[in-house]
Length: 170
Image 1 (cartoon, rainbow, N blue to C red):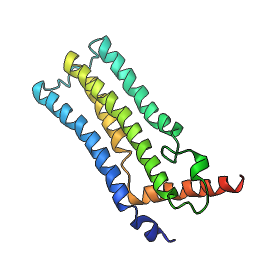
Image 2 (cartoon, rainbow, N blue to C red; image 1 turned 135 degrees about the vertical axis):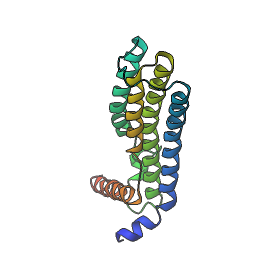
Image 3 (cartoon, helix red, strand yellow; image 1 turned 90 degrees about the vertical axis):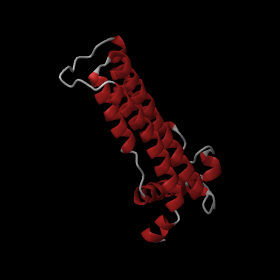
């Protein structure tokens, strides 16, 4: 199977992942815009105002790390175990791997989204501009997860190859 054939059937699955990711990002953007219109940020005052702001900044930095680490602990096959999926010639293997990739992407993005909302809440309550900046960094971390057909196809090939190698040793 050449590269064009392997990405042609991925279109709908990749589009779903893109829509989910944009929806998560839009929540951050809309709430942040609402807060900025309510109280314009004073960029001349970059002091962290209170304890809640310090906590949310730390949680935001930790959230970026968690958003990259936690999805690695989730199964690549989605909700089914490797003994069910890693059989050569399994017709549902590809779809199960795509499902697993979607779950991992959603979990990683949701961690960053939650931390971004927490930082926006700190900005809303304490008017701490660094929290607004952390929310932007977290938004960027969400957008960096944006999938393309080629990136999904490459990851899918890697997972299928690993499943074949794993099946050989059983």
